[in-house]
Image (cartoon, rainbow, N blue to C red; front, side, top):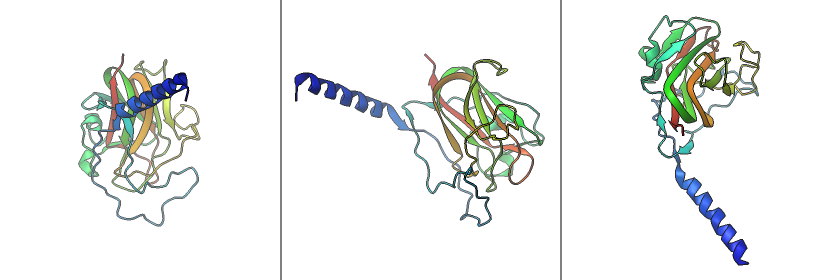
Length: 218
């Protein structure tokens, strides 16, 4: 092998190794499972993800933390059950006391991270007390608290544009103790806004926890 080629190959392998070493499993703590087997009457559709058979291992840069923990939450409408602060309190068990409920219609919750972060993953649990699908889920980030500028959409399965954020192409998913983990790819933002509009079990909008994993933006 020519020296130049060997040197190039060694450099590439070193870079790949360094990248791999910089990654680590997301430091996420899952709540207790609530799904006992798979009910036979669950909706089936090509636009619905199957229930995962095992816990997902999501790799992110080593050192990422849940920068949403304890951060203030606002919403499009005041909850009638629970407090918005519960959405970032670290509790996500499938019990009534951990669930925040809002009235029907397209609604959102928004977290202020307090500063700009490089966001690598967002994990969310709407309501895994029941095996259900939350409809019209849209997740956006921005450096503008009013989301008028600098908006990046990370997930959108609102195919009928019921939330007014544009029609999405992502698939719906079942609520389980695993939550839903989104790859944010290091996007820089301070605010996270999440929309929904009812579910397969009713018209209400429910939340249990929203976690945002990132590092301080450089």
